[in-house]
Length: 332
Image 1 (tube, rainbow, N blue to C red):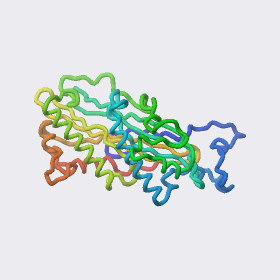
Image 2 (cartoon, one colour):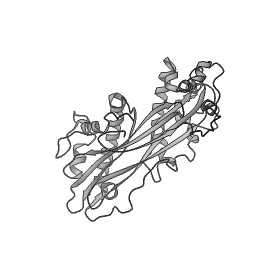
Image 3 (spheres, rainbow, N blue to C red):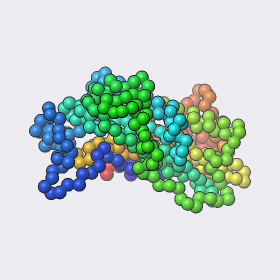
Image 4 (cartoon, rainbow, N blue to C red):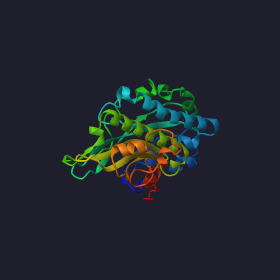
């Protein structure tokens, strides 16, 4: 279980596939040779054979890495529509770019870039708005050491050519965003006569207002995430989709959900560094029409931040609704 207070899916992926060995082959042999400067103690201590690059870097190098990987997410958003955000998951978002390095010299072992997208739907008979999150990962093995990698980042990170790799970071994506590593498709039967998804039916000025609202919400989420909201156990988060159902007979909203993807990085001696993805459908309590909602959450300066405005008919804020989605996850 990961994000509390919401429907959640979780998938864990490792930097290295589990190595199946016979009784005469040690896990150390499976993991590969250590750096030349690593000590015998390090060889015996499998927990110290790899560290995440952010735990190795110090000072200006660490600051630059943090800045550039944050800019990398923005760079991907800007180019995603050119190729990757036009298919089954048009709301693909970059979550984390990180690398495993050796603890003594910072020798790069492997890097992983994780992504998430979602498929959203409405049960026509009940008005329940649901979502399924798809997880993607792209793996690459630059050469050199951690400091070399930091220096290789260009001002526009997605155009960077990392040491030992052919082509830019964008070109490394290849086909890894075509098929998700984890995804549960919507149920076959979701039709019903009573409710529809606003994503499928809203047009004209109402659609423009809805798109402006969701764009504003995504920006507001990103800004607060850079502050305190994304501290703690799930530091890497992205807004995927805000969706509502609408009753056909009178245009009243049935339910609304905000789908958020969250990512954390872990390490164990057997697998190395791995990524855990959680996708949460956060219920948004609303009573009224879509016009009521878009008016209440219009991206204009009212003196009250978007996430702190009361929702129509309930008075609940999005900030409090999201807080329930990000309660600390229980330890396995």
